[in-house]
Length: 596
Image (tube, rainbow, N blue to C red):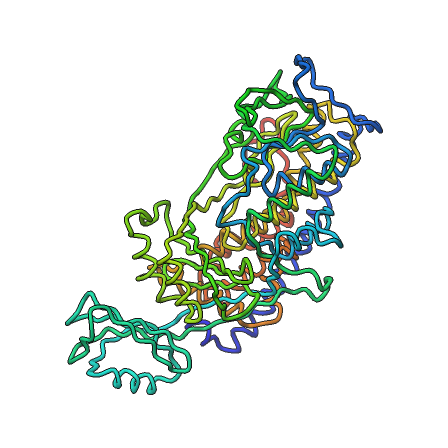
């Protein structure tokens, strides 16, 4: 590959250049952040001064008529998933009366939302949801995920004449540095397939349609399977901090129990039909309770957390939902992963495969299928796809468990959605969780973003006891959208970008970029710990993200693409516009039309 042939001289002048650019960008980013922080602080002080800081919580709902049967709270939370339950507990702990309305309070059964990165676990600790009692970890039987493993296959294809099975073994012995991964019979039995998973050159032979090996031409694919182990940079944290994996339903039920344990939090099953609005301000919700009876609930602030399929967000944001792929989920039983207590990512063709433990005997396997349509589960197309396309690319340690899970037939699928946050600041209402912002679930960053958003919102609301002035509160909470950006945008960008990089492509340049990214992560040091700290939510800084993407592009030989573009745009104008004299030119005086 191009990157492996780079001369030391090239790296010698390229490294100082990269470091110089990074340092200069850092200075300007720090200056911009300092100015923005001062502006935000002035804005928050002026806005906060308009909101009364009483010692008692008020529940004014404007001029709407409140009947005796209607409930009045300080905050209504729509949805009791991860975001809704955590938010209800957090606000309830701050002595606010919280009314949570959830469509279905039974234990959910989902194939995602089962991996919490270390950064998300830190937010659980910060919110007080997880404490010394290990309420969440113990009761939902969380599995500790220490690190990650990424697999990448490299190989070549060639036709070889093979007469006997002994000839296959002899061939393998002649190519000791390569792993013989799978073989197609191309002449005498087109429908037949031999699938090999090698460990120490041990051959597992599978042939459909009988033994037809005589004098046939076989199309052989030799694969070199590489794997890298990426460790979470946890040296500066308590020994208990790590990733967590679990059954999504168990985790959510424990979160709901935690919220309901507070006397000022009411958890009710019901379906919210609409938001109640008066003069542009949201005053509460209209919903149907468990018995199907229509009711209303009022609060000074309504927070919508009804998930990725939200039917309320259209009035609160501009939803631009993209569905790049779908996840097909299986549970591998009694499966021994190559690395215990690790998340596994296989850079397969056409897109990645994820595996992580969710109990002592179960491993969740998520197969990414590009596009919005997946092979039909009902008519057997999905089973055939998993066996013929996916199974040959699985690590040999999990192959049998994977086939057994496919044969068992408990296959589920769900669309992977991506949606940037584009809110309409609305007095009396706010969006949170997947109803507000989504990214590809490849990196498992969704819960980290949601919990981080709750920390930001809690810190903004803590000084305020009176939430009844909807207009002033709305103006004050506009800072929420700015303060959440560094963490959310970093995790979102990384997830969506990595998915595009990790997918195979017919474009050779994109495939080279995938291998360059893999090789870059293999270098160790900051080349490994930096990206992993971003992915895990431990150091979600936008500038760090940009620097590493830039480094991967240079390492992958893309400098010939990037540098000419930057030169054409103008290095000075692009990175240092304030140093260009034209930046300070004033508008022309009336009557002066000539250019100087």
